[in-house]
Length: 510
Image: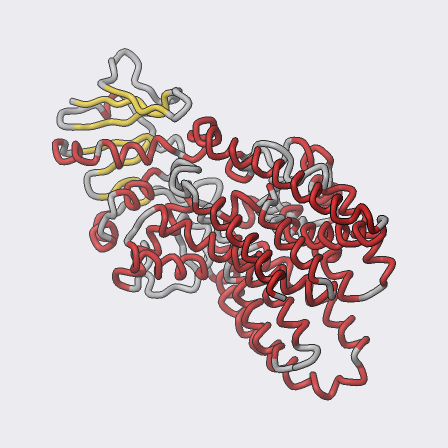
């Protein structure tokens, strides 16, 4: 047992080192969603109001897409402890993802009844290309994955002690208030697993009835704010802009979107085309995962144990939230794929080790671990040394530089005009300047909601956010223009470059 926990501790140490090392430098800037989470957490920590002035909201209006509360309120704790910073925004993702690593170990131990498989699952998720960047960047999905897997683990514990169903229901509620994908996955998961559970445990049903009723009562009550958001507020606006219409004519598109997550190109070669969802710049999984995956499936279907079918079922469910949107394949929305695959590959490796001659077991195991560590190490080295330089523009690095490098110059001007070409520059101003939430709410002016359902800030204080024109260059005005709205015929007084040397913003002043 000591050896087991020693090995698990080494996996945890590997995970923490590779997530915390240069966490505020790679990626090189907060993305707009991270900045929004951070500033709303900051605002909550100041006076319990979000940026719009809502007191302790269940859904944060943010850009108009209504961010979910779990990650923001968690971040508010760290902002209160450490101040508003990039670290305070990203550190909760590390903790939630560490929770996923540990829960995956416990869950695999419970369903596979094998300590080696449990260790392998924790190891595989720790070095997963799919999981990597989401576990060191302030995305809400990290909390959703942890709470959903915890809910499953607690539900399995409830087979022996039905009271755990009630605790599991709160964990599932945590998942649907962490990330939107689980608002799709959880109902589907329960729709299939609950009837199977009832049919296979009829002899013990009298012990389960009351806890199950209480659990579903909590789940139903938790849906009320979600229903109100989409029925009476503007929550459905954003969904309608990114979602595929759910009608018969859309079936081919939805099917294609779903299957794209199993394509060889997405899985093993290119991965997600969005660099913010693909830290390593290659496939979402390792090619060496493929044989282990098949060995895992062979073992699962050979044993015909309902608990062992669980990771395969999760693998089938995981792409559905992305499939019903217009952007597919989508690594973030299908993030449940990563832990499901880790369990199957862990079971597969353990099965393979069992069936080979005893003389080769230790050698093969060591070689497999070394191979994975080399693959992960090379990817991690690339991420630390070249990812930020290559992809800083995708992380809106130029906006960060405005408010860190030039913040002492703002007092010299009556007005600071910033191009909104890279989207939502106002949130970077609020975050990096640690702008007082009350002052912001008193002076903010909004543009009409755009075609994507987003609210955009026109101005607050001396800051204006718009497409730059020649007429903007007036006396005592500082202007930051993108490449697309660079002022023709006027020489800039400076420039802000991305880390790869390309110009992000041109600076003008009078």
